[in-house]
Length: 471
Image 1 (cartoon, rainbow, N blue to C red):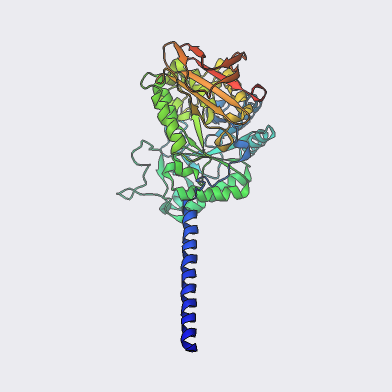
Image 2: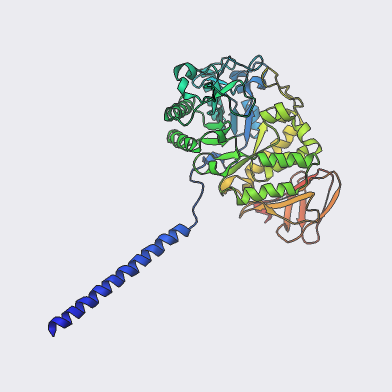
Protein backbone atom coordinates (compact mmCIF):
# COMPACT_ATOMS: atom_id res chain seq x y z
CA UNK A 1 0.00 0.00 0.00
CA UNK A 2 2.74 2.41 0.96
CA UNK A 3 4.71 1.45 -2.16
CA UNK A 4 1.68 2.13 -4.34
CA UNK A 5 1.18 5.55 -2.75
CA UNK A 6 4.86 6.32 -3.16
CA UNK A 7 4.72 5.37 -6.84
CA UNK A 8 1.67 7.58 -7.33
CA UNK A 9 3.41 10.50 -5.60
CA UNK A 10 6.56 10.01 -7.68
CA UNK A 11 4.45 9.75 -10.84
CA UNK A 12 2.65 13.00 -9.96
CA UNK A 13 5.97 14.75 -9.24
CA UNK A 14 7.32 13.59 -12.60
CA UNK A 15 4.22 14.88 -14.40
CA UNK A 16 4.47 18.14 -12.50
CA UNK A 17 8.16 18.51 -13.43
CA UNK A 18 7.43 17.73 -17.06
CA UNK A 19 4.61 20.27 -17.07
CA UNK A 20 6.94 22.90 -15.55
CA UNK A 21 9.51 22.10 -18.21
CA UNK A 22 6.85 22.48 -20.90
CA UNK A 23 5.74 25.78 -19.40
CA UNK A 24 9.37 26.96 -19.15
CA UNK A 25 9.92 25.90 -22.74
CA UNK A 26 6.87 27.87 -23.87
CA UNK A 27 8.01 30.89 -21.87
CA UNK A 28 11.46 30.68 -23.46
CA UNK A 29 9.90 30.22 -26.88
CA UNK A 30 7.65 33.23 -26.27
CA UNK A 31 10.60 35.33 -25.11
CA UNK A 32 12.56 34.36 -28.21
CA UNK A 33 9.59 35.16 -30.43
CA UNK A 34 9.18 38.49 -28.67
CA UNK A 35 12.79 39.43 -29.50
CA UNK A 36 12.20 38.39 -33.10
CA UNK A 37 9.25 40.75 -33.38
CA UNK A 38 10.97 43.62 -31.59
CA UNK A 39 11.97 46.40 -34.06
CA UNK A 40 15.68 46.65 -34.71
CA UNK A 41 17.74 49.64 -35.85
CA UNK A 42 18.74 48.97 -39.44
CA UNK A 43 21.64 51.43 -39.35
CA UNK A 44 24.34 49.93 -37.14
CA UNK A 45 27.17 52.38 -37.87
CA UNK A 46 27.70 55.63 -35.97
CA UNK A 47 27.76 58.87 -37.94
CA UNK A 48 30.52 61.29 -36.94
CA UNK A 49 29.09 63.96 -34.65
CA UNK A 50 30.43 66.68 -36.94
CA UNK A 51 28.23 65.51 -39.81
CA UNK A 52 24.94 66.36 -38.06
CA UNK A 53 24.44 69.70 -39.83
CA UNK A 54 27.22 69.54 -42.41
CA UNK A 55 27.37 70.73 -45.99
CA UNK A 56 29.56 69.14 -48.64
CA UNK A 57 31.64 70.76 -51.39
CA UNK A 58 33.23 68.94 -54.33
CA UNK A 59 36.63 70.11 -55.60
CA UNK A 60 37.73 69.15 -59.09
CA UNK A 61 41.36 70.02 -58.39
CA UNK A 62 42.28 70.21 -62.07
CA UNK A 63 39.71 72.95 -62.72
CA UNK A 64 39.51 74.61 -59.31
CA UNK A 65 42.32 77.08 -60.02
CA UNK A 66 44.52 78.20 -62.88
CA UNK A 67 47.38 76.24 -61.30
CA UNK A 68 45.26 73.14 -60.70
CA UNK A 69 47.12 72.22 -57.52
CA UNK A 70 46.47 71.47 -53.86
CA UNK A 71 48.48 74.54 -52.88
CA UNK A 72 46.29 76.80 -55.00
CA UNK A 73 43.13 75.17 -53.67
CA UNK A 74 44.36 75.60 -50.10
CA UNK A 75 44.33 79.38 -50.55
CA UNK A 76 40.56 79.24 -51.05
CA UNK A 77 39.78 77.35 -47.85
CA UNK A 78 38.94 80.54 -45.88
CA UNK A 79 36.44 81.48 -48.60
CA UNK A 80 34.83 78.05 -48.44
CA UNK A 81 34.64 78.27 -44.66
CA UNK A 82 32.87 81.61 -44.93
CA UNK A 83 30.48 80.12 -47.48
CA UNK A 84 29.47 77.53 -44.90
CA UNK A 85 31.29 74.45 -46.19
CA UNK A 86 32.07 71.64 -43.72
CA UNK A 87 33.10 68.60 -45.76
CA UNK A 88 35.46 68.99 -48.72
CA UNK A 89 35.37 66.16 -51.23
CA UNK A 90 38.49 65.98 -53.39
CA UNK A 91 38.11 64.15 -56.67
CA UNK A 92 40.70 61.35 -57.13
CA UNK A 93 44.14 62.49 -55.99
CA UNK A 94 46.07 59.61 -57.55
CA UNK A 95 48.32 59.40 -60.57
CA UNK A 96 46.33 58.83 -63.77
CA UNK A 97 47.07 55.97 -66.16
CA UNK A 98 48.55 56.64 -69.59
CA UNK A 99 47.60 53.50 -71.49
CA UNK A 100 44.29 53.99 -73.33
CA UNK A 101 44.02 57.43 -71.70
CA UNK A 102 41.15 59.58 -72.92
CA UNK A 103 42.33 62.78 -74.62
CA UNK A 104 45.25 64.76 -73.17
CA UNK A 105 45.05 64.49 -69.39
CA UNK A 106 42.77 61.50 -68.96
CA UNK A 107 40.14 60.70 -66.37
CA UNK A 108 41.08 60.96 -62.70
CA UNK A 109 39.00 57.81 -62.22
CA UNK A 110 41.60 55.77 -64.15
CA UNK A 111 43.97 55.20 -61.24
CA UNK A 112 47.56 54.13 -61.94
CA UNK A 113 48.66 53.63 -58.33
CA UNK A 114 46.48 53.76 -55.21
CA UNK A 115 49.47 54.83 -53.11
CA UNK A 116 50.46 57.73 -55.37
CA UNK A 117 49.66 61.44 -55.64
CA UNK A 118 49.03 62.91 -59.08
CA UNK A 119 52.08 65.13 -59.75
CA UNK A 120 49.79 67.57 -61.60
CA UNK A 121 48.25 68.39 -58.23
CA UNK A 122 51.43 68.44 -56.15
CA UNK A 123 53.14 66.15 -53.68
CA UNK A 124 52.07 64.05 -50.73
CA UNK A 125 53.24 66.86 -48.45
CA UNK A 126 51.06 69.31 -50.39
CA UNK A 127 48.07 67.06 -49.79
CA UNK A 128 48.88 66.79 -46.09
CA UNK A 129 49.18 70.58 -45.86
CA UNK A 130 45.78 70.95 -47.51
CA UNK A 131 44.16 68.53 -45.07
CA UNK A 132 45.83 70.15 -42.07
CA UNK A 133 44.75 73.61 -43.21
CA UNK A 134 41.16 72.38 -43.58
CA UNK A 135 41.25 70.84 -40.10
CA UNK A 136 42.54 74.09 -38.64
CA UNK A 137 39.36 75.73 -39.88
CA UNK A 138 37.14 72.93 -38.54
CA UNK A 139 36.51 71.49 -41.98
CA UNK A 140 36.89 67.85 -42.97
CA UNK A 141 38.35 66.25 -46.09
CA UNK A 142 37.21 63.11 -47.89
CA UNK A 143 38.82 61.83 -51.06
CA UNK A 144 37.42 59.92 -54.02
CA UNK A 145 38.07 56.19 -54.05
CA UNK A 146 37.79 53.97 -57.11
CA UNK A 147 37.59 50.36 -55.95
CA UNK A 148 35.82 48.81 -58.94
CA UNK A 149 38.48 49.36 -61.60
CA UNK A 150 41.95 50.69 -62.38
CA UNK A 151 43.85 52.15 -65.30
CA UNK A 152 45.18 49.65 -67.84
CA UNK A 153 48.70 50.37 -66.64
CA UNK A 154 48.04 50.28 -62.91
CA UNK A 155 50.99 48.84 -60.97
CA UNK A 156 48.84 45.80 -60.12
CA UNK A 157 48.50 44.74 -63.76
CA UNK A 158 52.12 43.62 -63.95
CA UNK A 159 52.42 42.41 -60.35
CA UNK A 160 49.08 40.61 -60.10
CA UNK A 161 47.47 40.05 -63.51
CA UNK A 162 45.21 37.43 -61.93
CA UNK A 163 43.59 40.14 -59.78
CA UNK A 164 41.58 41.34 -62.78
CA UNK A 165 38.41 40.14 -64.42
CA UNK A 166 38.72 38.69 -67.91
CA UNK A 167 36.23 38.52 -70.76
CA UNK A 168 35.27 35.38 -72.69
CA UNK A 169 38.44 35.79 -74.78
CA UNK A 170 40.64 35.91 -71.70
CA UNK A 171 41.38 39.63 -72.09
CA UNK A 172 41.18 42.39 -69.49
CA UNK A 173 37.76 43.99 -69.56
CA UNK A 174 36.29 47.42 -68.80
CA UNK A 175 33.08 47.58 -66.77
CA UNK A 176 30.44 45.87 -68.97
CA UNK A 177 28.03 47.91 -71.07
CA UNK A 178 29.73 51.28 -70.45
CA UNK A 179 32.14 53.24 -72.66
CA UNK A 180 34.82 53.22 -69.97
CA UNK A 181 37.54 52.12 -72.36
CA UNK A 182 40.31 53.68 -70.24
CA UNK A 183 39.84 51.31 -67.30
CA UNK A 184 39.71 47.58 -66.52
CA UNK A 185 37.76 45.85 -63.77
CA UNK A 186 39.33 44.31 -60.69
CA UNK A 187 38.17 40.88 -59.52
CA UNK A 188 36.84 41.60 -56.05
CA UNK A 189 35.86 37.99 -55.52
CA UNK A 190 39.52 37.42 -54.60
CA UNK A 191 40.30 37.94 -50.87
CA UNK A 192 43.77 39.26 -51.66
CA UNK A 193 42.31 42.05 -53.82
CA UNK A 194 39.99 43.09 -51.00
CA UNK A 195 42.84 43.04 -48.51
CA UNK A 196 45.06 45.17 -50.73
CA UNK A 197 42.29 47.70 -51.36
CA UNK A 198 41.37 47.94 -47.68
CA UNK A 199 44.98 48.47 -46.65
CA UNK A 200 45.33 51.20 -49.28
CA UNK A 201 42.24 52.96 -47.89
CA UNK A 202 43.56 52.79 -44.32
CA UNK A 203 46.90 54.19 -45.53
CA UNK A 204 45.42 57.56 -46.52
CA UNK A 205 43.52 57.95 -43.26
CA UNK A 206 46.72 57.26 -41.30
CA UNK A 207 49.22 59.04 -43.54
CA UNK A 208 47.30 62.10 -44.71
CA UNK A 209 44.73 62.24 -41.89
CA UNK A 210 41.80 62.38 -44.31
CA UNK A 211 38.33 61.98 -42.80
CA UNK A 212 36.72 59.45 -45.10
CA UNK A 213 35.85 58.64 -48.69
CA UNK A 214 33.46 59.27 -51.52
CA UNK A 215 33.31 55.87 -53.20
CA UNK A 216 32.90 55.78 -56.96
CA UNK A 217 30.37 53.33 -58.47
CA UNK A 218 29.92 51.86 -54.99
CA UNK A 219 27.18 49.46 -56.09
CA UNK A 220 29.57 47.67 -58.46
CA UNK A 221 31.63 46.55 -55.46
CA UNK A 222 30.46 43.79 -53.05
CA UNK A 223 28.77 45.28 -50.01
CA UNK A 224 30.69 43.09 -47.58
CA UNK A 225 33.90 44.70 -48.83
CA UNK A 226 32.60 48.15 -47.91
CA UNK A 227 31.33 46.97 -44.54
CA UNK A 228 34.68 45.51 -43.59
CA UNK A 229 36.52 48.58 -44.90
CA UNK A 230 34.31 50.86 -42.79
CA UNK A 231 35.06 48.77 -39.71
CA UNK A 232 38.81 48.97 -40.34
CA UNK A 233 38.69 52.72 -40.99
CA UNK A 234 36.65 53.45 -37.88
CA UNK A 235 39.34 51.73 -35.82
CA UNK A 236 41.66 54.57 -36.82
CA UNK A 237 39.23 57.48 -36.38
CA UNK A 238 35.53 58.21 -36.97
CA UNK A 239 35.18 58.54 -40.74
CA UNK A 240 32.46 59.77 -43.07
CA UNK A 241 31.60 57.59 -46.06
CA UNK A 242 29.64 58.69 -49.15
CA UNK A 243 28.49 56.15 -51.74
CA UNK A 244 27.94 57.07 -55.35
CA UNK A 245 24.90 54.85 -55.42
CA UNK A 246 21.27 54.84 -54.34
CA UNK A 247 20.63 51.78 -52.18
CA UNK A 248 19.29 51.29 -48.66
CA UNK A 249 21.53 48.28 -47.98
CA UNK A 250 24.68 50.38 -48.13
CA UNK A 251 23.53 52.34 -45.07
CA UNK A 252 23.52 49.52 -42.52
CA UNK A 253 27.22 49.08 -41.83
CA UNK A 254 29.14 50.88 -44.57
CA UNK A 255 28.02 54.34 -45.65
CA UNK A 256 26.73 57.43 -43.86
CA UNK A 257 25.29 58.89 -47.05
CA UNK A 258 24.19 57.84 -50.54
CA UNK A 259 23.40 59.90 -53.62
CA UNK A 260 19.85 61.19 -54.05
CA UNK A 261 19.98 60.68 -57.81
CA UNK A 262 16.21 60.26 -58.04
CA UNK A 263 15.65 63.56 -56.21
CA UNK A 264 17.85 65.27 -58.77
CA UNK A 265 16.03 63.56 -61.64
CA UNK A 266 12.64 64.57 -60.24
CA UNK A 267 13.71 68.20 -59.82
CA UNK A 268 15.18 68.32 -63.33
CA UNK A 269 12.04 66.90 -64.92
CA UNK A 270 9.79 69.28 -62.99
CA UNK A 271 11.87 72.32 -63.92
CA UNK A 272 11.93 71.24 -67.57
CA UNK A 273 8.15 70.76 -67.67
CA UNK A 274 8.47 66.98 -68.07
CA UNK A 275 6.84 66.14 -64.71
CA UNK A 276 4.92 67.79 -61.91
CA UNK A 277 5.30 67.82 -58.14
CA UNK A 278 3.92 64.28 -57.86
CA UNK A 279 7.38 63.14 -58.96
CA UNK A 280 8.79 64.64 -55.75
CA UNK A 281 6.08 62.99 -53.68
CA UNK A 282 7.29 59.64 -55.02
CA UNK A 283 10.87 60.44 -54.03
CA UNK A 284 10.04 61.64 -50.53
CA UNK A 285 7.71 58.69 -49.94
CA UNK A 286 10.46 56.22 -50.83
CA UNK A 287 13.00 58.22 -48.87
CA UNK A 288 10.85 58.01 -45.73
CA UNK A 289 9.42 54.50 -46.02
CA UNK A 290 11.96 52.47 -47.99
CA UNK A 291 15.22 53.98 -46.76
CA UNK A 292 15.94 53.27 -43.08
CA UNK A 293 15.76 55.90 -40.38
CA UNK A 294 19.01 57.62 -39.44
CA UNK A 295 20.34 57.75 -43.00
CA UNK A 296 21.63 60.68 -45.03
CA UNK A 297 20.97 61.36 -48.71
CA UNK A 298 23.01 63.83 -50.75
CA UNK A 299 20.83 66.35 -52.56
CA UNK A 300 22.40 68.37 -55.39
CA UNK A 301 21.81 70.43 -58.51
CA UNK A 302 25.21 69.65 -60.02
CA UNK A 303 28.30 67.47 -59.74
CA UNK A 304 31.23 66.63 -62.02
CA UNK A 305 29.27 64.06 -64.03
CA UNK A 306 26.20 66.23 -64.52
CA UNK A 307 28.16 69.38 -65.37
CA UNK A 308 30.42 67.66 -67.90
CA UNK A 309 27.94 65.34 -69.62
CA UNK A 310 24.40 66.61 -69.02
CA UNK A 311 24.67 70.37 -68.68
CA UNK A 312 25.27 73.25 -66.31
CA UNK A 313 22.93 73.96 -63.44
CA UNK A 314 21.30 76.63 -65.60
CA UNK A 315 20.71 74.15 -68.42
CA UNK A 316 19.39 71.50 -66.03
CA UNK A 317 17.00 73.62 -63.96
CA UNK A 318 16.25 76.79 -65.87
CA UNK A 319 13.97 79.22 -64.05
CA UNK A 320 13.53 76.73 -61.22
CA UNK A 321 17.21 76.69 -60.27
CA UNK A 322 17.04 78.84 -57.14
CA UNK A 323 13.98 76.98 -55.86
CA UNK A 324 15.74 73.66 -56.47
CA UNK A 325 18.81 74.87 -54.59
CA UNK A 326 16.67 76.04 -51.67
CA UNK A 327 14.86 72.70 -51.48
CA UNK A 328 18.18 70.84 -51.55
CA UNK A 329 19.04 72.61 -48.29
CA UNK A 330 15.77 72.92 -46.34
CA UNK A 331 14.35 69.57 -47.42
CA UNK A 332 15.74 66.30 -46.09
CA UNK A 333 19.26 65.68 -47.37
CA UNK A 334 22.81 67.02 -47.12
CA UNK A 335 23.32 69.70 -49.79
CA UNK A 336 26.26 69.50 -52.20
CA UNK A 337 27.94 72.34 -54.08
CA UNK A 338 30.03 71.41 -57.10
CA UNK A 339 32.92 73.86 -57.37
CA UNK A 340 31.99 76.91 -59.41
CA UNK A 341 28.28 76.84 -58.71
CA UNK A 342 28.70 79.60 -56.14
CA UNK A 343 30.39 81.70 -58.84
CA UNK A 344 27.52 81.17 -61.27
CA UNK A 345 29.65 78.96 -63.52
CA UNK A 346 27.79 78.76 -66.81
CA UNK A 347 30.02 76.39 -68.79
CA UNK A 348 30.39 72.66 -68.95
CA UNK A 349 33.85 72.11 -67.55
CA UNK A 350 36.09 69.89 -69.66
CA UNK A 351 36.61 66.47 -68.11
CA UNK A 352 39.81 65.28 -69.82
CA UNK A 353 41.46 68.68 -70.35
CA UNK A 354 42.39 71.74 -68.30
CA UNK A 355 39.48 74.18 -68.05
CA UNK A 356 39.81 76.46 -65.05
CA UNK A 357 36.79 77.97 -63.32
CA UNK A 358 36.36 81.73 -63.63
CA UNK A 359 35.79 82.96 -60.09
CA UNK A 360 33.46 85.87 -59.36
CA UNK A 361 30.88 87.06 -56.87
CA UNK A 362 27.42 85.77 -57.77
CA UNK A 363 23.87 85.69 -56.41
CA UNK A 364 23.94 81.88 -56.35
CA UNK A 365 26.84 82.01 -53.90
CA UNK A 366 24.97 84.49 -51.71
CA UNK A 367 21.93 82.20 -51.74
CA UNK A 368 23.94 79.14 -50.72
CA UNK A 369 25.65 81.06 -47.93
CA UNK A 370 22.37 82.27 -46.48
CA UNK A 371 20.70 78.86 -46.77
CA UNK A 372 23.67 77.10 -45.16
CA UNK A 373 23.58 79.50 -42.21
CA UNK A 374 19.87 78.76 -41.74
CA UNK A 375 20.43 75.01 -41.87
CA UNK A 376 23.27 75.05 -39.36
CA UNK A 377 21.32 77.12 -36.82
CA UNK A 378 17.96 75.38 -37.19
CA UNK A 379 18.04 71.93 -35.61
CA UNK A 380 14.91 70.81 -37.48
CA UNK A 381 16.96 70.98 -40.70
CA UNK A 382 19.81 68.77 -39.47
CA UNK A 383 20.60 65.36 -40.93
CA UNK A 384 19.68 61.79 -40.05
CA UNK A 385 18.22 61.36 -36.57
CA UNK A 386 19.52 64.77 -35.52
CA UNK A 387 16.97 66.49 -37.77
CA UNK A 388 13.21 66.33 -38.34
CA UNK A 389 11.15 64.62 -41.00
CA UNK A 390 9.33 66.60 -43.67
CA UNK A 391 5.56 66.56 -43.07
CA UNK A 392 3.42 67.36 -46.10
CA UNK A 393 0.97 70.25 -45.74
CA UNK A 394 -1.93 69.78 -48.21
CA UNK A 395 -2.72 72.76 -50.44
CA UNK A 396 -5.04 73.69 -53.28
CA UNK A 397 -2.41 73.13 -56.01
CA UNK A 398 -1.04 69.72 -55.09
CA UNK A 399 0.52 69.05 -58.50
CA UNK A 400 2.32 72.39 -58.75
CA UNK A 401 3.02 73.50 -55.18
CA UNK A 402 5.09 71.62 -52.61
CA UNK A 403 4.45 72.63 -49.00
CA UNK A 404 5.81 71.01 -45.85
CA UNK A 405 6.81 71.51 -42.23
CA UNK A 406 9.95 70.30 -40.47
CA UNK A 407 9.82 70.73 -36.70
CA UNK A 408 11.12 69.47 -33.38
CA UNK A 409 10.92 70.70 -29.80
CA UNK A 410 13.24 73.63 -30.55
CA UNK A 411 12.79 74.75 -34.15
CA UNK A 412 10.29 74.78 -36.99
CA UNK A 413 10.31 75.62 -40.69
CA UNK A 414 7.33 75.97 -43.02
CA UNK A 415 8.41 75.89 -46.67
CA UNK A 416 6.31 76.42 -49.80
CA UNK A 417 7.58 76.04 -53.39
CA UNK A 418 5.72 76.99 -56.57
CA UNK A 419 7.22 74.58 -59.08
CA UNK A 420 5.29 75.95 -62.05
CA UNK A 421 5.49 78.78 -64.57
CA UNK A 422 2.22 80.30 -63.36
CA UNK A 423 1.44 82.57 -60.43
CA UNK A 424 -0.36 80.73 -57.61
CA UNK A 425 -2.54 81.94 -54.75
CA UNK A 426 -2.02 79.08 -52.34
CA UNK A 427 -4.39 78.02 -49.59
CA UNK A 428 -3.47 75.37 -47.04
CA UNK A 429 -5.35 72.63 -45.19
CA UNK A 430 -4.94 71.23 -41.68
CA UNK A 431 -3.28 73.22 -38.89
CA UNK A 432 0.33 72.12 -38.47
CA UNK A 433 1.60 75.25 -40.26
CA UNK A 434 -0.21 77.68 -37.92
CA UNK A 435 2.07 80.00 -35.95
CA UNK A 436 4.30 83.06 -35.82
CA UNK A 437 7.33 83.08 -38.13
CA UNK A 438 10.11 85.14 -39.63
CA UNK A 439 10.38 85.25 -43.42
CA UNK A 440 13.78 83.78 -44.42
CA UNK A 441 14.16 86.22 -47.30
CA UNK A 442 12.87 89.48 -45.80
CA UNK A 443 13.11 88.79 -42.04
CA UNK A 444 9.57 90.17 -41.71
CA UNK A 445 7.22 88.73 -39.07
CA UNK A 446 4.46 86.50 -40.43
CA UNK A 447 1.46 84.98 -38.63
CA UNK A 448 -0.35 82.06 -40.25
CA UNK A 449 -3.78 80.63 -39.39
CA UNK A 450 -6.71 78.97 -41.15
CA UNK A 451 -7.43 82.14 -43.15
CA UNK A 452 -3.90 82.54 -44.51
CA UNK A 453 -3.14 82.57 -48.22
CA UNK A 454 0.21 82.85 -49.95
CA UNK A 455 0.76 84.45 -53.36
CA UNK A 456 3.73 83.01 -55.19
CA UNK A 457 5.19 84.09 -58.51
CA UNK A 458 6.28 81.40 -61.01
CA UNK A 459 9.15 79.31 -59.56
CA UNK A 460 8.96 81.36 -56.35
CA UNK A 461 9.25 79.95 -52.84
CA UNK A 462 8.80 80.97 -49.22
CA UNK A 463 10.74 79.69 -46.22
CA UNK A 464 9.23 80.71 -42.90
CA UNK A 465 11.21 80.11 -39.73
CA UNK A 466 9.79 79.69 -36.23
CA UNK A 467 12.58 79.80 -33.67
CA UNK A 468 12.84 79.26 -29.91
CA UNK A 469 11.88 82.85 -29.12
CA UNK A 470 8.84 82.70 -31.43
CA UNK A 471 7.04 79.67 -29.99
